[in-house]
Image (cartoon, rainbow, N blue to C red; front, top):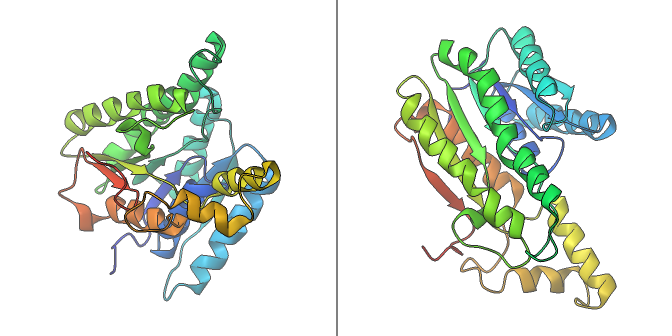
Length: 267
């Protein structure tokens, strides 16, 4: 399907790896100019090359990739990121927000400062990015915001207190701006479940070291056990959904929370 985003400008945050990188790749393959960001220069340059290689492999895809080093918990970095994107591409049509995950913890293990750090990482980074991007999205004929959150906003996961509690603020934010910004700007959220990102790979490798899993395949099988699709997801499956939501093909989708979890959510 032609997503009709050729020449559009997209900014994807926290996109040097994982789901942010998958989303940026899908948009680039569809023909958009894409800006990515991350904290580590080496990872960022590797991600840029990965996107460029994928774009070249896509039939008829063209566009530029901009890599900007930024810390999403620093408002000044976000302001510079949006400014560089607009300067490079002449505007901004699509914003995709993502972030790394907070540490695994339980209520009694969590220190007060960790709550504030998680709030800045998961919620305020989205607030700051939308604030900076809004005037540019408003000027676009296609303005969209898509926020990558987690299935934990609907169903809590053991040991992920901060994600369970804090990410729900992003859903309230997206739901609100989807009403306040419409019809000029659409805003939606995607709720990934267990997807084979570097974080999941690290989790399985840790399980192997502890003797929980005999090997990597055993770890995959365990994580897939309750998923109706009988497997965990691949990053590109989320990325392609994000690209679709950003495109005119999803022009009547606004304020939605879309699980991408193989049917695991029960609600």
